[in-house]
Image (cartoon, rainbow, N blue to C red; front, top):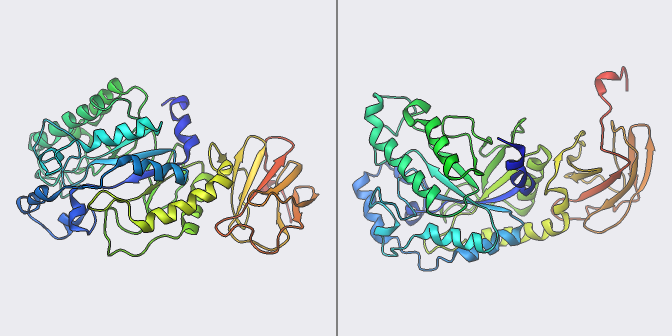
Length: 396
């Protein structure tokens, strides 16, 4: 994949994930049918109850933009096989529900109207078909032909009927076999229909970016960590384990410092509205981003990792995310460059700089953390930052 195609995505750094669909009605997350072993015919009766009367995707886009998010990825089909779009392959879709509209088309329109890049999540796993409960292959390719053919056609519909799509986020490769899924053929057809699309690594082939889940693992290729705002993928009002704004900005900083993206799931409720707890947290994150976003957007991995947090690099500027504020003096070592200035982004206060070789001591800073979430110090250097290699130093 050309670096030119990933450029916008790597500069964005922060995106919104939206897990929504039929499981929302049971209010226990997207895996509820599996964990409670609900037969597919019984589960299918939920289609007659899916009627999100407050669904206004433009509101979702507004929340994402206010939070500083630069792209959005929505579940077009979850593991249960229910489609949020108008498909000709099955009647197990939103078109058979009381709302009876292509909700995906409305979401895409709202994103395009706001210049928000659109991503589609698509689960290859589909519990309405046999052979999807285990990763192991339990039959010949013909055993899975109906499942695979349906998915290929649905993805063709998704890539054809909704204008420009920027990201395709696969999930649920069961059985775990690129041969069964004809993954190479699938990705080739996708790129013919959407030449500029970015595809993740969960369809049995490498794709364009990696997707660690609920963990931050920096890789030497484009990558994106996905988390959810509480602990459940999908609407679950009983889950009160909401991540604090501090936790959210720390996750974002951790991803950016490793040259990766942060994709945060915000699950709507049964009526199609974001929960107040999520909106309130995103509003606080957005306030932080308006002050400190220059340390995140378009940033790269810095050559040093300060002991009190994380660091990013943008041109000749380095940014220190000070997770543990150490008082009026902040220091670090091993940098080759001269530090020309050091400024606290949230207050504009400049530090007095003392530098001895590769050691930098920033003095006359606030005694207490100047930002309630995560203070950021901007360092202007005399060139692109370089690292003094500790391996080349005999003793401290």
